[in-house]
Length: 536
Image 1 (cartoon, helix red, strand yellow):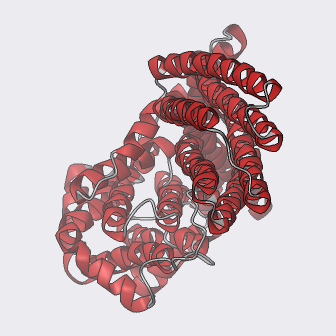
Image 2 (tube, rainbow, N blue to C red):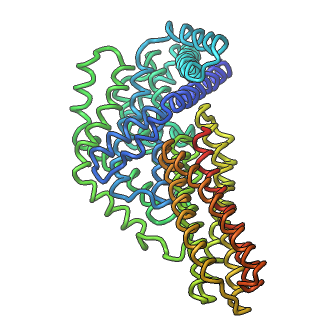
């Protein structure tokens, strides 16, 4: 019997977790840009942050995933602890939606959802339909998994010793909290632990009073994911995990000492005789009340985290910061949003490399040349980081539109890097002029200034188009590139004519023509950045 129970529990739990994973991935793809918009709603307003954390967790079906994502945001310098605390508290409410769903007896609906999901998968090629089908399949598997769990546990009704052991462990606060903590750490999902409790309750194996302390331990256990994830990250990122743990430990203490009896009275009166619903409601009320009590004192949670994790709040000034964090790969839509931020930083660095290299021509100062080369080196570091991240992101479940975005980013990053390379070429030309005491003639200087004005404007517009997904600005970038092509050809003809007439130094003429070639290529890459966006 015990072997059959164990196999059934493992199979049921596996189906439940896989169904939840499928449903979460389908929801993320279906949400698409809306999930990115939610990220942009992260503000210092903690109430708004709480709502965002709640909604994001409902979509990705995991408070652990949300807390890990927040660790990544804080580690990348995109979010402060004051912003993070609202998200973390909201995630605790959002995660209760899974328990609420599985507490209803929807096993009759599960095969229908699974069948419809498979039908839509086979019958339609539309991306939105495929994503919706994935949600249905995940939903169906989740409830079939819960049904399998209940069936596997049913023989234990005839084993009084098992029920007595559960009651004994559950009614002891320390034992109950430890069991909930241990189970959640083991499966890395508080929803799975709640699912097991609901399955046990459905078979009459555990009363509500015994389940309550396990629910408390379940909420503490889910915090370990963020704590583990923060290992090796910045002090502030580690503090996110500590804040999450502090919130649930304080909440557990409050409920064990003061609110446990009122909670029991409320849930038993709402659903008398239905322990599954009582467990789901207790999980939800526990988290809502905790948030209501602790949100006004969020600064205290931040202070606790700073005492537990001492050290500097801000990163070292010399640190090469990045918006990219492997933790965010669990939410691909948000990872893509951060990639855009990182590409924007890379573009700024490439622009600095170009402007500093040009400055070297004007100042005749080799320090400017060295600065330009240092900026170009940073551009290469950005490229390497982004390319590795894109490679990792490509292996995650992406919607079709996000897949196109990732493909386009590979090209965009290469174009920005090539602009950095041309800035390096220009810096070397400036250094050659300084070493050989070469100066451009007046006409060449004027032509260079005219083209450079267009170059910088075209590059800035192209990057803005890329960053803002603005088709109108992308078209402007294309027009500017054509204007630069015309100016470059005209300036080249005039320079060659002056060289024929011996009206300019031949070395200066050659350097000027090389400079024109590099500037024209920079304009081409700017246009490519804009066209990469419009191609999406």
